[in-house]
Image (cartoon, rainbow, N blue to C red; front, side, top):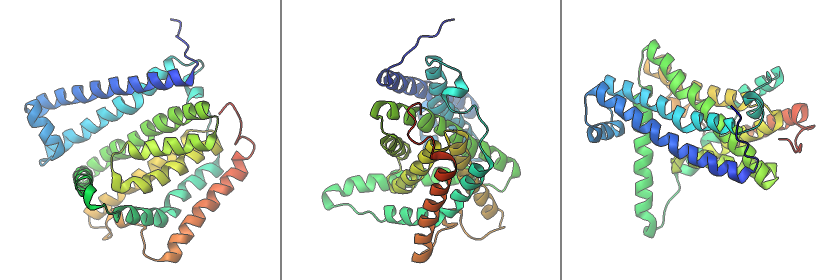
Length: 309
């Protein structure tokens, strides 16, 4: 079958948005239908349960529902869009080469080196206040943030090695693969083609990456991570590198929650790597920048402004 070729980046962006909306609705609805049979609940009861799961069975369904939605929102739209794109799938998504050892080591170091500065951004974001006229908006945002926190803690709150393995797939692997295909593999490339400016492409895709999570009080650290992921992709031209960083970041959180739940460590996962020491925070930011510059000098200097990116 001959593929329909869509060359205009604007047309491809519009098509991509339509595919995301379509598959988001289909995956959410199909997941809920499975839940109706799985938990023997009506759709209204199931929708209410998803926001506040209690039993182990309900939490297990929530993991499944998140898995289905990740496929529907992030992966299927990318795959279908690639059908309308000339060339091989792996080439279009920059997955056709094995990353160098230098890039892998620097990427893993970046995850942990950036923690203190990222924690500083988190605290800064959480302390944002609203004027009296916007107090209602602030309360709504706090409520949504609390709901997200409760859900993620419900998913990760287990001392079972089997659940740990499932969480590594649902919370670490699937978001790393799906979100990097979505934001860096497709959107960042499209915005580069539209703006012809690699920096704007990275900034816009990082902004959307953070905004898409709908967690206002985590916007700054997630935007910061989006910038790092975006420039990692620019420097290496290899999507496996941001996928690796995303997986190591999320997987570390999953493992830390497990170790905390089993009593191996006392520090809560969300506090791991954070500090109030200004020297450590500044050092973290500078070390992150230094590692990025090192990667650019080793791998990215000869391709940074290439038009085929």
